[in-house]
Length: 488
Ligand code: ADP
Image 1 (cartoon, rainbow, N blue to C red):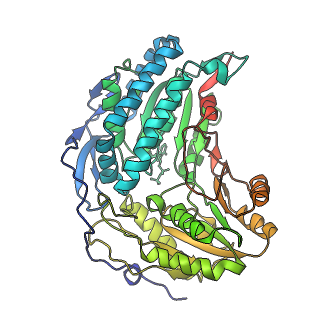
Image 2 (cartoon, rainbow, N blue to C red; image 1 turned 30 degrees about the horizontal axis):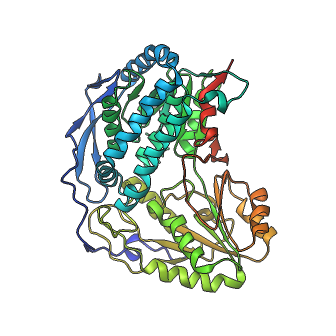
Image 3 (tube, rainbow, N blue to C red; image 1 turned 30 degrees about the vertical axis):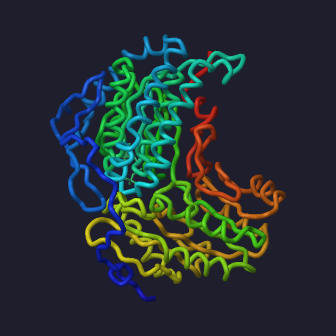
């Protein structure tokens, strides 16, 4: 089998597509400390790590590395804040959460630029999706804080206590909002750790939380990598761990918390099936396929990374898909015209390139449009694979990059069988003109989130979460309150 080296696949040269978003109004410090007990505090061990811009490999800032002693301080602060925070009325808690939402809205542009600088995602996405959705999560859960008796009728819901929250690098501020807002609304206190490659918007959020006047110790923000996360997971005075990230780390946390009283929710990987029937509105479906896999460089746990297209329209769909892929602009995340930004880290780029080589070696037929990539930074062109089957690793395993595996099907039973045949159960999409097919598939597909004639639509009011190796527990909506309470 022909092994294609990356240099054969990727072309590299720099083109600027238009003037980039101004970064003049954005305040980024040179050095960030930990936010513990209402103060920015130096890490006990005195060590800092660099956060790097993935589009040019330049250092953006130094960020404190929290070790066990810092985690202990953060947990103690959260524990001592718990008593008074949980005793506040829901209305009082709601006011603080509302204030945080308003402050995010006020600083939305700044948040958007920092998110794109630190994480590599196109500014259009940070500006129109990540940041407004993060504010919406705070608004939404501010509204629930004084209505818990309606959320849980005939029962008295009590907060769990101190919750440890560990989040990934693909939607940094949004994931912080998903975690913090419902935990605060229900009266818990928090130790949160953002991912090591994207700590800056969470740190900015800590500044805003400080400004909101939230009592000290209610939210503590600790930065660092896996060891810092493990110190949170293993701290004996934490009541619950909420984790979003890879299935690999999720399994570690599942084992580490087994046999302890800690409660746990896990939102892990996925291998979403996007199913296109012959009766679908094809042009709309093609746009949906593009969005499903190339949104946020494919760094999306619910990405539609497997396409199932009904045989009778397969040639048409694939031709249109390739044509559309040719128009996608890969490049500077701060450029408003960019469709696909920088891959979040060198490590993730290697993972994606490795999977591309695996796909080729397993006999997949690769298609990548001829696009120019900047010379510095982490880049991957939009990629699709034809001629793949269920047993191929690129069909079974999460790649977390802009790589789509395309298969065809004839019957509805066949596609249900194939769609359900991975270790994951997070998301799926169905494109058809027939409501009856949508209802049938939503019954049969083993996925926590199923979209019909759309994809990657998120809303604070809707629950999100998976089955099988995609984890357990739900975030968003009324469902998102439940993992943070216990009942008298
Ligand atoms: P990767 O960077 O390999 O994709 P993840 O996406 O799972 O890893 O990382 C998600 C979050 O989990 C990050 O905040 C990361 O620092 C954290 N993490 C990594 N390893 C561990 C661990 N052993 N225990 C707790 N948290 C961890």
